[in-house]
Length: 546
Image 1 (cartoon, one colour):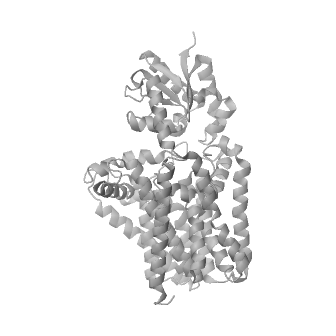
Image 2: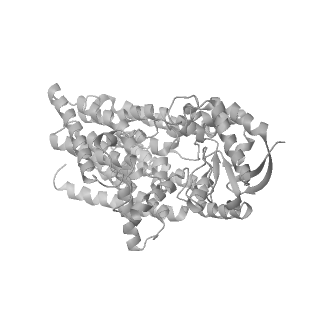
Image 3: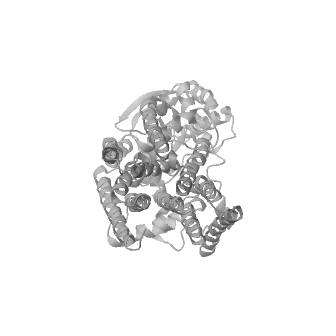
């Protein structure tokens, strides 16, 4: 690209950023629901509160080492500007919109570099913005967006540069990539092997390739060491080895391979393009199998069309670099996801970035075929329009949750009530945030305002337990609640059959525990429905069988 065109591209990317940010902030305000699909962002905003109140003494988190300082400082800035002052759980959604818009601008620049024209870059950027999980994570308060955007930028640059890698280019990719995974640790695994692969197949002598792979690793280590030194002595600061391996989620119920995860993998891959529901478990994923499968088929069509059109250019070094980076990340990412949480949007968003790259390549290949290109350009808008329509069903969700919380509090005074939940019900997040920031008992009964027992706790935290140990732990907690004089109410988990409970537990590699847990509940307790809460479900009052 000539020097005269570079400034023009800069302005175009700035425009792509501004228009994307305008669209996303407007969508956040219209939806009024920053907890669609997942409530994890509320917990992260609470965890960030010390960084907002007292930056110098807040505690670092090894798995999100740069996230909390970054978003804590950003929320302080928004507070100073009077933007949603004191409400970080809303502020974080707007911060995510900022980072997502930066990602859209990066995709625009990538597609423009590939094609040399804005007519390809614009629809490619729109397609990326409209992909279901990208759009979702851009308008809610989940914590992945800044790390993802930086890693995506490193991937885009590697795709453009690693056909002719140079020392400055490799260092730049390594630095940007490292900053990204230091925001969210798990991002290191899918993309690092892919970056190394792209360098390993670069058209140059073997020793030169090996040296550049080594340089990439050195640049990553330099960033890690510099980060460690900058934060040395801060509350919670970690050593270099702790930053490289935090072990997040490894020794827990999330780890492991089960047949149930095949269904949630379908949910994760299908939902990346079209997010039409909250399919977070094997049961709901299987119920939505056909539309999810249709989304996967559409992605396969894009992939096959891209391969067919570009196959004659398969020897092109840049195409090979792009394929190594994005398809390498896809393969490594899905292997990791299948072992952990394949349904989770934040686990899929970087692994599935290949779809944007493929769409940009397809647009570039069809740029001279006017009719076909016009059809592709129009189709670039389809994911955005469809996903906005899907999201519209969740409008006002935050206000509805607050109203439901008030109903629950009035009917079941928290001071005298213990709640038994499956563990993933969204209302638990609101009770946690608004009543008392206390986790479920899990063998340690307490007397905080929010007192609750989670059926899934044993599967998540005690992967080595037997089914009987898991069931007995729940029973002991319920018995402790009665012994303390509390009223005990249970959610719709009471109505689940053994099969449904097993399907739900299969996502936590604990399906074999279902019979023992189900028998413990129904052999020892009776339940009477006492309250129906819109958007939440039915509560049943438990009492011991005599």
